Length: 233
Ligand code: SF4
Image 1 (cartoon, rainbow, N blue to C red):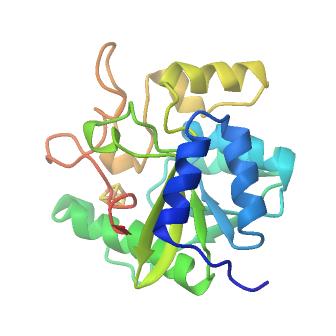
Image 2: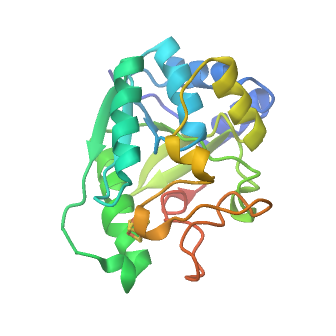
Image 3: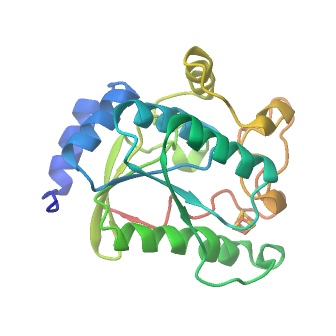
């Protein structure tokens, strides 16, 4: 399948049209526009479950990228396997190119780069993907507050359309969707984990704390870099 010609103006126009559309409609538009050139990233902790479920209803052959950092909770790995089997997803596990050891103790930004960002960047470029769907929501953090449903970015001089079907959704809406559609949730959510990443860098949150308050405690770090390494045009 040849690449689809896209430009920033076209993406901005479609974003305006799709801003109030349902996540399902946005996923359908993406798959129709970029056939065989779309990937979904999922960490199996929250909104990604909604998108993986939607994808399974439309086209379960679309690659679902999972970053195997080597530091996931055992519960995450078990839940991932069960979820993928239940919905027949086409899982693609991405691994770091090197094994730097417990770098999270001394340089978490570098650790996230080696274990998350570089493997994903490599996969997006080598897979020649033109669109990347993920579950970023405006209400998660101040740095995510401005994301649109579609954005035109560049990865290593290649254009890529970032697709955020849940940009306008709240955390409660994610929970409602999972309940309404009988979609299973990550078991650690029942133990107070509102955002689930690697075990060395994640704790449960207390009532009233922001959703991502349990990530990288005391390190002044709020993002792993996955949603900031591309260049927005
Ligand atoms: Fe390393 Fe922690 Fe980032 Fe995981 S979340 S890649 S352990 S710094």
